[in-house]
Image (cartoon, rainbow, N blue to C red; front, side):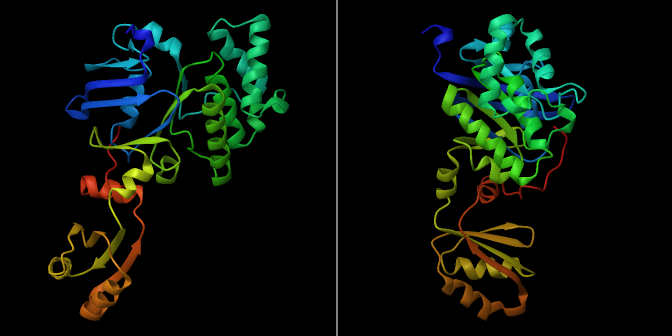
Length: 315
């Protein structure tokens, strides 16, 4: 098989990366098939932004290799950059220019001009639903519209892989939903593979597949609904000032609890009757009881033993 015919949009092989004594990535391997929306989910310090920068050729590899559609980031950087579109977390629009002028500036970087450029502008602005805003100053647009202009710039040269770093940053819920609709249209209409980083659990839940990251490693990879189902049944969350006593009480009933501070997490098939028994046995020693379906946060806790928001190291 020739490299350019690789079925994988992204293939990360045994990558390590450190900032001095701080280890950002540890022996990380990850494969992403083409035509998907794939989310790298993790709290601050999990390594997702470092991985984003390595894939995007913004930082040099220290160990291992990354292949984009079969092309090596280490050895074929120029070819890789031609396959990528990148939308950064920080806005890259000139607020004093119109939407059209911003897109034309991007086109100049890729040497697009003439009828080719006109056709591409018509195509991407239609895809992003901003055709009627071409003459608007970007500084006067809503956050959601600005993100769609950023996306239009990012796909102007028809990249096969689009990288988005925390794309929902600063957007209200309606704008976030609008952005997600734009991404799914892009995937469905052009087959573009989209890889995004996020710390938002609900955003990752919309992706086709995700990798949950913690301490520079992937702790879970798969479809969000499958990862949640693997926990089985329901999640019982118990807030108590007597975690050891409650843990033993649960063990006596063949239920295993995972302790996170003063909170206990119990997975598996359960009924409301267990709540009634707990309340009767411990009364005021229980601050709260919550029974619900597993979430991605529950997956993170089950795989790492940490709460999702408990770490805030720089990435």
